[in-house]
Amino acid sequence: MKAIIYEGAEQITVREIPKPQPSEGWALVKVSHAGICGTDLNIYAGTHPRAKAPLVMGHEFSGELESDNVPGVPRGSRVTVYPLLSCGHCEPCRSGNAHVCNDLKLLGIDCDGGFAEYVQVPVESVIPLADNVSNKMGALVEPVAVCVHALRERGFQPGDNALVFGCGAIGLSTALALRVFGASFVLIMENDEYRANLARSMGFEVISSTGLDMDAYCKSRTGGNGFDWVMDCAGVQSVADALLDAVKVHGHIVVIASYKKPASMPFIKGMFKEITIEFVRVYRLKDFAIAAKIVANDPNFEKIITHVLPVSEAQKGFDLMTTRGSGAIKVMYSFD
Image 1 (cartoon, rainbow, N blue to C red):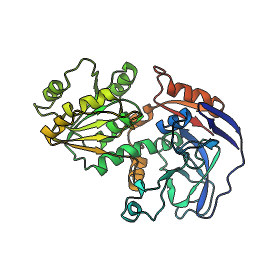
Image 2: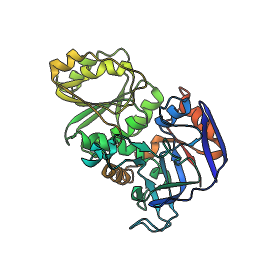
Image 3: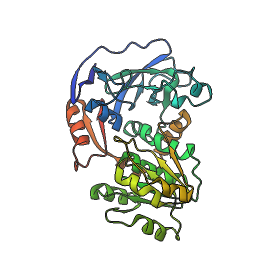
């Protein structure tokens, strides 16, 4: 079968490898679409602490079930896959928090993933797609699940307002999820005009933070209070500098972004406001199932997918994602 292989730092190839033979308790999926995630970019750069070459990357994917051993899901069903691999024995797993297992692993990072024509996956991780969810959208469920988890895990309340920093795939998915979850007002801050215009096409108000007095501006938009929820989907120092100015007294800052470098914050401002800074990592299985439903009900999610490439253009996908100004937000490969 054809597969996109990580061979080492900034080296990928497309080559033939053996088709997986699923182990007991695992099923075979014929891959349709697979998306490039920020984690895949870390692997590609050679900076991921666990991923080892040679590796089939990819943990955002959809396809067709090729096995008969998934309860309630017939062979031939279109599916997406919950890619987390938890040990089941550690304290987080035993206490219902397997998504943050002490030894958490993922398909496409710790074993071969979805950048191939076929992939083996745990039977319990197979999630069927509704008829009105395309294979392309099925591969977007994973990043949307991150955003659903952020809102559910941290107790977002309908009627609250929110500020989202960043219009990447996670930022846009978070803004759309906030709307589904009943936010009274969602404002996005993004300095890249292409990304800002894409968010505007989804019906959001977007402004640039360049030169902005963040404290004064956010108070002016919220009756003098600041935002109930401030969602960091950017993961850069300039945003870390602004988070505590944007949030209200007793408000919530949720860091969804994965910071590539250590960041500092003026914590004294957090003390004065008695705010809560919260972090999320991945998602629970329930979040994944919810994400699979909501992508079907808002066509704006499809706008996040800016490029779908054939496998033969594997290198182009990573070039797009690592080149500033390329217009790439979510790049996928099609194996159909």
